[in-house]
Image (tube, rainbow, N blue to C red):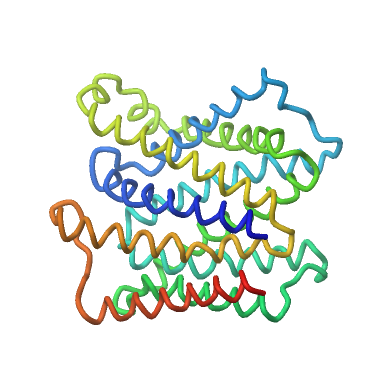
Amino acid sequence: MINWLLVSIGAYFLLAIVSLVDKFLLGGSLSNPKVYAFYVGVLGSLAFLLIPLGFFVLPASLFVLAAALLSGSCQIMGIYFYFDSLKKFETSRIIPAIGGLQPLFAFALIWFFGGGRETLDAWQATAFILMVAGSVAIVFDPKAWSFKSAKFGALAAFLFALAVVLAKFVYSDLPFFPGFILISIGSVFTSLLFLVSKEVRKEAFLVKDLERKAKTTTLFFSNQVLGASAFVLQSYAVSLAPFALVAMINALAGVQYIFLFLFSTLISVYFPKLIKENISRHAILQKCAAIILIASGLLVFALK
């Protein structure tokens, strides 16, 4: 248990950094969510470098093959709707919806696909509720909430949850690396579909434009290396965790928001022109209460 738990926390540490840079880039020159998702998906082709090393094997079941391809596809579409949501709405409107709904969707999907047999015991359920509540509370702003933004967040959350649950089926049948390669194939093919858009083709391959934005491009690809590393760690955690506990990996997103809050606060204090974090007394108290909820959930889960 502790192995996949620590791997998940490591993944969310990296994802906190990636989220900060994503928000910065989406507000600047790389502002098209379709182009952003295209690049993220295409970079998944780096997993193909594992094929000549003998890591690739086809599954015996067509269901597992379909699950792998669909998992990769859902991941990229979830990323697109996530980026699109960040572009259209404030972070405080989107993150609570994803942080609260993704683990609930994952729990429901696991219960459904498991025929009601895969579920959490009382202690695990308590930890799950505490972490989900903390994940929502740490970024929730009642003044910023709206039904429209919640719909966008819910769609991204469902796609992310479905991607994780389908990935677990793949890793239950295949070793980690062959399963990861198959899922990456689904991601790459889905990202290539964005090229149907003339707008994406124009923005994605403007070499002169990219040269002119060399600093932004370097930052983007460096950030995607971190993002890819986080995705590998998260995928590895999914492969290690029992089927019933996959939703707990999504619930651990609260750890990412703790890191994100700490990083944002430090940057806001020392580099206020880059990020402005609300560090009022009320905001600090709210986030501290949320951190206590998340930490309590982790403690209950780790001890029981």
